[in-house]
Amino acid sequence: MNSSAMILPASETHRLEVLYSYGVLDTLDEQAYDDLTRLAAYICHTPSSVISLVDSQRQWFKSRFGHHANQGSRKDSFCTHAILNPDTIMVVKDALQDPRFMRNPAVIGPPRIRFYAGAPLITPCGEALGTLCVFDTQPGDLSDAQRDALATLARQVMAQLELRKVIRAQQDSAHQLRHSQRQLEQQQQLLQQQQLELEEVNQQLRTLSLTDSLTGLFNRRAFDARMSEEVERSIRTRTPVSLLLVDVDHFKSFNDVFGHSEGDIALQEVAGLLKNNARSYDLVARYGGEEFAVIMPGTSTVDAERIAERLRASIAAHSWTLRTVTVSIGVATLAQGDSIQTFISHADQALYRAKEQGRNCVVHWTGLQEH
Image (cartoon, rainbow, N blue to C red; front, side, top):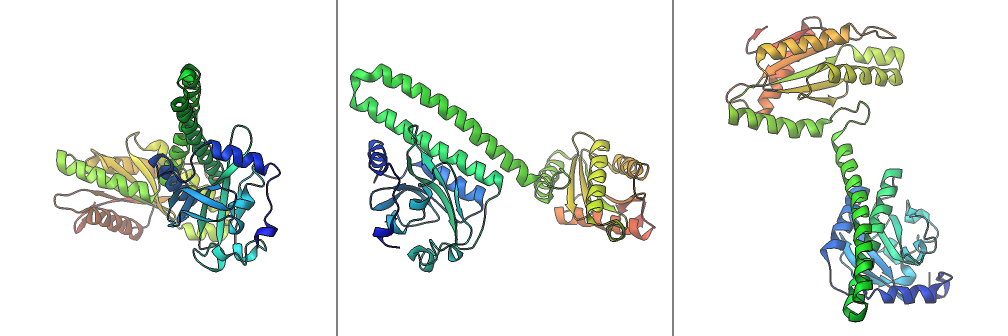
């Protein structure tokens, strides 16, 4: 691509005037923008993200995450294409398969971009100043949730630029102080609203990162974190903590006979029964495949066995549509000197013994003897 082939927005002259009015080009790095590029890369699972402002002959980066250059040629930039359609996020799944970019210097040479997604930075008057973009050296794509989150972050970038503009206006025109204060209040309200949006996105991401998508239970990551907390608390306060490992009996044959879709439904029902019959302060997690785990703070051996039996019985007595589903449960209570790995291993050994004893039963680990 050469400069003669570069396509410009219809309002290019006005767009550049608006860009220059923000007074942001060639300014120093700022934490507010760096936080947004870092978050964009995290949300989109890419190693790199930049806030790119498209000047007449260059693209200049207000913030960079995982990328070292502070500017590049506009004629070779992906963002030049992204600002042509300001109402959409431009996604290039594989630049080597895209005629617009397959010979681009940034694709065939450093930084060797293969995947790109850019959310335009739109001013209140509708001009696209640049993008908040993410990119990777591997082909990729964005989910709908990631697209929405990237668009939210792009609005946060514009909110920061708008706030900068307000502050400059205050500094330049003392006689417009009251008017500028009203603008600042409006911008603050806008920032607060968009901050709520950002916090909501962050909360959704935190929830997703700790939740099993099939069953809605906590996932292995959440289990590991809670296990560390409860073992540390048990040692510090000298109170008991118990663990259940729950395995769905003969689940492979269930999938073989009825199919994986029905198997998924069965796992969801088991998860619901475990959640509904555990105590409110117990953590119920999907441990992996057809295996579940229940962390029970402040729970002695006797109480742990009683609760485990209640869970087992509730599943066995459930009105199953295709065939009866049962579970085997291994129970362990943290002993003095046990590490987390040992604690889990004891529950796993108890679960193994429950399977040996014919399944659909509860076994508590008690050293060499089975209870």
